[in-house]
Image (cartoon, helix red, strand yellow):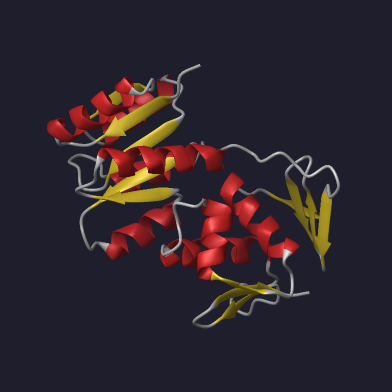
Length: 228
């Protein structure tokens, strides 16, 4: 079954560029010119991945991302202008999975799409280790369920994979590079802002006091460590 990608940008030439390259590789592409059009399509079509520009009329990509996240965990890639770091962080805070900086080439586009779709699929659990527990955090790998202090906690696939990676290496300092390549994939390694946002999300979900974490500890200038 082909993957359906929603491509949203107010620049027709870019929409056509992305659509042509997707269709040439077997994807189905549906295009929209702004966030309002995108939401209308999103509500009535099965979408496997959304690619959203930030700066658009009527409704920008950030607001469209926020609204999509209210009802769906579909992978979202944000298109940003060169050097707009605040937009990237804001996009992650709202639930985006990745970003592409304009201008971008076909190879980078397809690489990011494949990486995001790969991460969106739940990994097969290890037959020898179906549960992991650290303190009051319990993870059922077979069911992809997490409970904290006896309460069920919902995580996205990448949040789940990140938590499992940290817990499996509890007590060990993991570098930014190691975490990115292990959780996001071999295409990544320098996107430290990803970790800052996702670690913040996990702390909000599992820490008794996210401002004073006792599980996910920051090793300044190096990476992170999950307490034993």
